[in-house]
Length: 120
Image 1 (cartoon, helix red, strand yellow):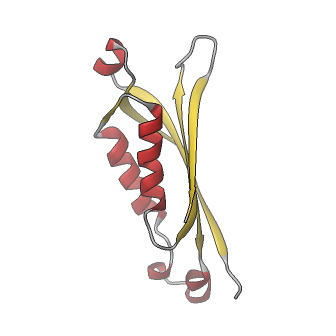
Image 2 (cartoon, rainbow, N blue to C red; image 1 turned 45 degrees about the vertical axis):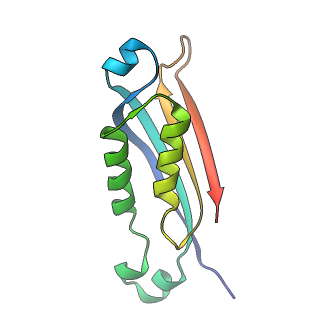
């Protein structure tokens, strides 16, 4: 059986959320940058050219935006895990990875990021 393995990459999705444990982090939204990679068998879509046979990355992106902007997180691990769960939830997904950057989280550093991945 030949697979048409597709990779969707959502790159540098810039959002704002409450993230952290310090008082200023709890009171003020901060920038986060979300990157997601989703692998799925796209054979149906490559054979049909029909949107119903493809994974809809716009729907996935909107769900990630709602999650990030409408919630509060203490840990980067929790935020990243929740993003990964959305990325991997469709039954066609074979594997996914989510990485969340927190710019200026450390002095002298551009950002701190955390990445998580899963295989189904």
